[in-house]
Image (tube, rainbow, N blue to C red; front, side, top):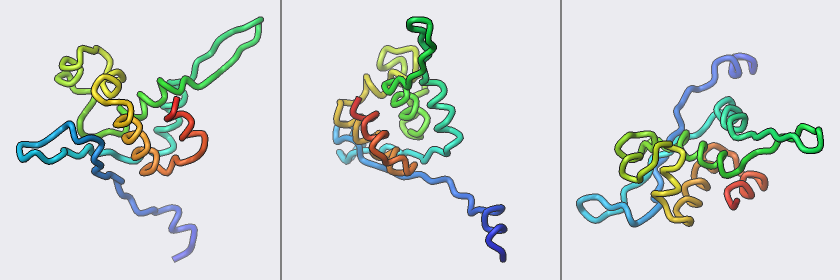
Length: 136
């Protein structure tokens, strides 16, 4: 098989992982319930970046910047399989209309940071830029 063939026919796998984000969410036996996350493709990441990019006009110049808070919220919702932050039950329980707000209401700051680190690690987005975005 040629090298080109390997690129034309990659192994298709859905990369998912269970991670313990918190010991506050327990099952009936008192054990922490893992969050199930999935890796994001570059195409998905591009969509998230575009959605979180803001455009302003200052002194007649058009400026674009990435809203790191919005990007993190969108990433958390897109990459978290379970719990499903988009579910009506979770949105209602945390008193929000937008699923983007559920992780921030549901998780403590350290838990949110662990979730984002796990997502970035699984999606291989670990870089200084991504770490800085998680901190903001």
